[in-house]
Structures are given as C-alpha cells and as structure tokens.
Length: 494
Ligand code: NAP
Ligand code: MG
Image (cartoon, helix red, strand yellow):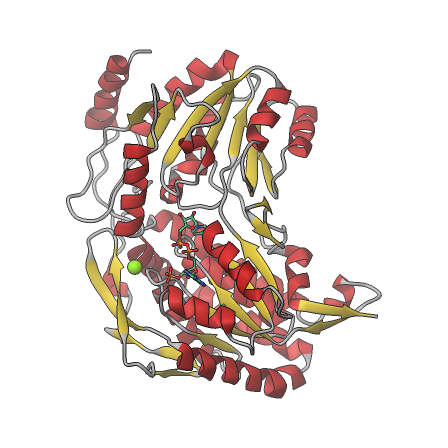
C-alpha cells in the first residue's frame, strides 16, 4: 500500500469514525504537598543541606512539588536508622508478623489505588490506563505475593536455613516508579532485611506517598527509608559502608559504575539494566494479534521500558502485510494527556529524555533508512514523541544496536528461523524477546535459542510477581520476582 493510501484511510479513521471526546481523570482527587522531606526513621525530615529539587509534570511542564535532595549525611542517617531497625524490632519479630505488615501495605494500596494511579501519571507522564490497569495492580500483587513468603522461607529453600543480609540499598529509575519500588521493597522486607531506597529525580512522588502509607501501616521506624535526590544521592548509597546489599535498576552505564564501586567489598548486588529486545514474527503468526503485541511492546508507556520490543524481526513472506497493518494501527494511536482514559501514548518523562530520543532520530538514522511517524496531533506544551518506525535498517546500524528508550521501532526481515535467532542474539543486551507463530514447537526452539532472560510467546510485556525477571550479558545480573528474586536478599546456610 502506498503512503498516500494510508494517509487517506487515516483521515477517514480519525475524522469520521474514531474521534473521542476527552475523558480525563480529575487530579482534584489527589493531594500533592508543595514540599516533601526525606522519609528517615519513620518520619519526614528536612535534608541537612536544606536543598530541594523540583519534580515536573511532563505533559504540561508545571511544577508538581519541591522534593528534598539527600546528601551524604542524610544517606548516613537513613542507613543508621535502617541498621538500628534491623538489629532491633525487625529481626526480633516473628516472620509471621513481618508478613502481616506486607499484607497491610498491600491492602492500604488497594484502598488508595486510584490516587496512586493518578499521581503516577502526573509525575511520570504515562497514560492513566496503564498506571491504573498495570502498574498499581502489579504493585499490589507484589506486596501480596511477598507477604505470603515471609514465614515460609525455609520451604522456598528446602534443606537450608535462610537468613536476611541486613540493610539493602536500592536505586530505581523513572519508567515504572512505584512498581520498581515494590519490586525492590517487597522481597527485601519479606526476607527480613531493612531498606534505604532512592527513587529517580523526575518521579519521586508515588514513593513519597508510599512513605506516608508505610507510616500509616505502623511499620517499625527505620525499616523502610526513602531518600530522594539525583544521581549523587545514588552514589552515596552505593559507597556507604553500612550497606549489605545493593539492588539497582537503570542504565547499563550506571550499572557498570556500580559494579566497579562494589568490587573488592563484601556488598552483594543485583543489576537490572538496559535492553534491545527482538520481537520475532513468523509467516504463520496471526498478523493482527502480532500487530497488537508489537504496539504493546514498543509504543505503550512511550517505549520507556527496558524490556521493550524495540527491534521487529519479520519473516519475509509476511513483512509487507504486517508493516502495512502496523502503520494503520499506528495512525489510530492517541498521543496526549496522560490523565485521559482514551490516551494510548503519554508524555516522554523529561526534556532530557525527549532530547535524547530526538537526537537519536536526527543523528542515529543513517544511509537510506526511512522514518515513518504517525500523523497525530501533539499537545503544544509538554514532551511528546510520535510513534516511530525506522525501515531499511541493517544489523550494524545504531538504531538496531543501541537502546533509544522511546517509542521508536526498527524493522528487519529474515528468511529462516536460524537467521532470526542470529539477528536476535547479535546485541550486547539480553533482557527479553518475543516470538509470534502458530507452532508450539517453533516457540520452544526459538525461545531456547534466544539468549535473554524473558521470552514471550504470542504476547508481549506481561508481568507476574511469581516469575523471575532479569537479563543476560549487559542487561544485568540476578533476578527479581519469584523464588529467584528472594534469593539475592538471603544468605543460605545448612
Ligand atoms: P540511570 O541514569 O541509570 O538512573 C537510574 C537510577 O540511578 C536513578 O535513580 C538515578 O538517579 C540513579 N543514578 C544516576 N547516576 C547514578 C550513579 N552514578 N550512581 C548511583 N545511582 C545513580 O538511568 P536513567 O537516567 O533513569 O535512564 C537512562 C537510561 O537508562 C535509559 O535511556 C535506559 O537506557 C536505561 N533505563 C533502564 C531501565 C531498566 O529498567 N532497565 C529503566 C530506566 C532507564 P536520577 O534519575 O535521580 O539521576
Ligand atoms: Mg516528574
């Protein structure tokens, strides 16, 4: 199909058939303070430096709140409080009681789910449909799941005596702010550790709301400490001698710095880093279903997903049909107000990230590569990127090798299953991958061949607290979720 035909159908699609009236969630429902302090030892405390950073709503560039910047002394206070709580109330408490706190946090989150979803969408830019239907339900599921493990750890590791490590230092990114906090806090507490956690500078609000909720849940002071700030606050956590275990999610670049910093110390660590997943579509796959999976894999959440299916590999026989249908689907995606229930793609999380994506599209697209972007309107204020397809790419191009972390998809074709596996594995990353085919045997063969921590078959980006998640190669070390995710927070003796 020619581009002209797509444009004609797009106009018909939007102007006559698929125009929606706005249906925004009301932010009046939530209360965001003007200023937030650090949550240390069970109460909010001013930072020693008196310095605060601003957090912004990326969909309209308004300042949502001033948030404390934790320095070396604040991090030290937090680690000291976590150690005191670990040596005191937390390790003396029966495991069954520890589990009850996690259940209580999960139930309080259930009661306040709508409020958390709205704040997440305002601070992060992700569509409310996603924060309401994916992030917050997953957060709750993580606390429930790990609550159940607290008094059953010896059954998880039969023949061993599991013991907590002590104080966990945790650093998380901005793409799934509360979900990453849950992935970190829930297993650490279930295993009997205490926590000092740092949210990302641009998305601290749901973590600070969680601090209020943790206080309301009556958790002993110091068990969870939440220190906001920027990269330097993360460095202070990494270098603090009182930290027993580090858990980091973010870029491969910072992950490598952390590895160097802990080398030669007895700190344990897990790293969840970048990805460049191949989503492989065979010619026997249900094409419409695959198109939905591709869209879900790269365009939803603005492509701000480490396991995003950012490389599409299509078998030659179905390539033309699939690319045409994908372009049609892209034209129907609604980019705009994250609080609107009809929105498919929200705001890019920060100006820096938008510049990075646009810079990539300007400089990273080489030779005769072709960019296709949907023609949707974009709001005037805020940070936005249209869903983007890059065609005519080859394996050595930057767009295929590097993580863009935006709604940008590259397309390559292949002939044989072996070629698909070779292309998929030709990457420094190994976090996730997808296979679309009618044949179960092909799913197993390809799934085994791809060197990545998670492989989805005829679906994409599905999560569950019971399944381990994590990468090979430069995508990280260790697993989160399931029994595998409890292990890095425990010491096993016989
Ligand atoms: P990042 O710079 O690695 O940040 C992740 C977390 O580490 C943030 O809390 C960050 O603080 C903190 N941090 C920054 N520098 C640090 C340092 N030297 N030592 C300790 N902590 C430090 O990642 P980002 O800026 O959020 O995103 C950049 C890239 O990371 C993306 O383009 C993508 O490639 C990757 N990423 C991967 C994932 C994933 O889940 N695997 C998630 C998000 C991003 P501040 O943010 O407050 O500066
Ligand atoms: Mg923000």
